[in-house]
Image (cartoon, rainbow over all chains, first blue to last red; front, top):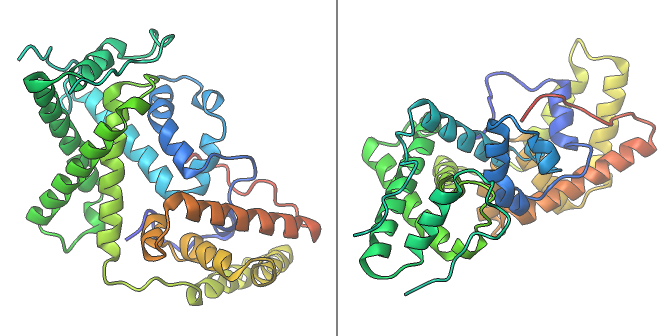
Amino acid sequence: MNDRDKSAAPGRAEVLARLLGPPGPELGCEECFTELDRYVELDLAGSDADRHVPGMRAHLEGCPACAEDFRSLRALLESESSAGASIAPRHPSSGRD
Amino acid sequence: MTMPIEIPAGDSAAPGVDESRLWLERLGASGPRREAAVVELHALLLKAARFEIDRRRASLPHLRGDDQEDLAQQSADDALAAVLAKLGAFRGEARFTTWAYKFALLEASVKVRRRAWQGHEIPITEDAWAVLADTAGSTDAHVEDTELFGALSEEMRIALTDHQREVLVAVTLNDVPIDVLAERLETTRGALYKTLHDARRKLRTALAERGFGIEGTREEAP
C-alpha cells in the first residue's frame, strides 16, 4: 500500500532519517519532476548526475514518492536497453504518412 | 494545427537529439502526420504505464487483470494530454521518449497508490508515538538514543504546527503516500512536501539547539 518495505520495523537510523530528512539543500517535488528525465539518463550513462543536478539526490532521499518515480524511470530505461529497445522504438517512423 | 516547437539551441550533443527533433516535428505538424505521431506516442505511454502497474502489482492484490488494464489506459490517456500540453516545456536535455515516459509513470504510480488506499482511513497520529516509543525503548537502545528520541518526540509536539505534525507523521511514520495525503487534503504533492520540509528543518534546528549532533542520518542511495 506504500512505497516502503514494511517487512521489518524501521530501526533507529531509519526513523531518524524519515523524520529529519536529508541535511542539505534539496529540490522540491516539481523541480524534481522537471529534472527527472535528465538525471536518470545521466545516472545510467555513468555521468556525475549529482553534480549536474544539485539537490536531486537529497530530495530523493527525503521524498519516497519521487524516489519511487526515479526507480521506475530508471528501471524502464534499463529494461528497454536490455531488451534491445523493445518497449519503444528508438527512432519513430518518419511520419511520411 | 501547426505548433512551432524546437529543441533549444546548444543541445546538439544531448542524447537522441535527432529522434527528439523528429518527435517534435511530427507532433507539431498537422493532419495525418500529427495524428499518426499522437497514436504512436499513446502506444509508448501505454507501454510505460503497463510497466509501472506491473511493478506495483503486489500493492494491488485485489485488482483483476481487466482493472489493471483500465488503470493503464487511463494513465496513458492522462499522460498523453499532459505531454501534448507541455511540449513547449521539453528542453531537449534528455531523449523525448524519456521525458514523455515520466508522465506516464507518474500518472500510473499515483493512480495505483490512490487505488490501494481507496476506502482506507489515513492514520494521522496514533501509531507514530508508538514507533518513537518502541525505537527509544528498545532493548538495544543506548541512553543517548533514549534522550534523542525523547527530545524529538517533545519537539514534535512543541515546535511543529498541528498541520506540520500531521503531515510529518502520516508520511514518514505511517507510510501514507504523499500524493494520497495530498488528494485527501485537497492540495498538491509539492505543497505537502514543502510542509514536510519545513517541519524537518524546525526539528533539526530544535535538536541542534539542544546539543544533539544529527547532521546526517542515512548514507544509503535513493
